[in-house]
Length: 311
Image (cartoon, rainbow, N blue to C red; front, side):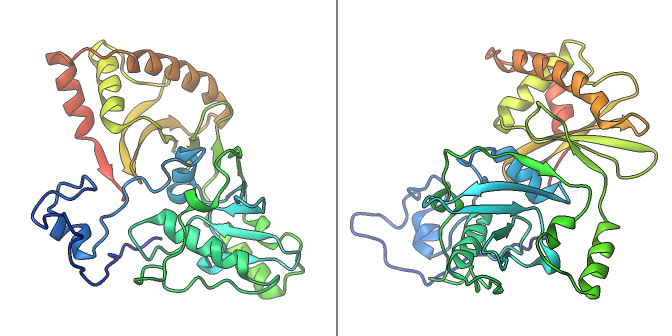
């Protein structure tokens, strides 16, 4: 889906007063000459930090096949955000002037927010009905704004999950080839539901035997792991009810996504209550700040061993 390339630029001399051998001012832990002084920009680990609904942004980028949301630019322009667009295009401008922006576009740099922001900036300048080509956003001097710089951060962020990619062709009269492409794309969609009342909790059924709950959490990883460890050490199996299993977690764009295995025959709506009850237990555990005891540290190590990193 998204490739990762290093953004590089010619090395420049250290500004006056900065020791090239001193730790870089950005806090990366590298020496200045090997970090910002080298022209290499370290990867942005949480590219959507500061945006309303950061966990849902991560979900649209990494988890959800077909979904849309509305965002607004700082100058009041309404934009439709889409998980993915046909052919992997970064954005399109409909004949009506509506801008549709993809979250799962091809990344060119180590800052997904800047990649998407660059595509949006290009779309804002493109005429109606024209293709949008933001250019090589990872090249030195060609990158556009980050989303945090171009979007209205006071606007609410609400995701709508779709059963298919029919929204691709809204307001158009598609040719036979477009309809065939849409049908082919629809066949690859996994049934997905965003659980109401729970931020960034997504039920998905990848097959007939099991379903999953994938829940993008907003808490910092260390704090979340401590809370889960406290629950487990206290005898809480971190389940969502009978027939469920805590499968582990993965890291995505700086956030942790716990995953539960669920029975496939129960509809998504059946898990709203159990997930809400678990959230209450987790929130209480998150308020505890005492150091972990020996049992909690062992529980934490077990949880950590079941985490993987997507990106």
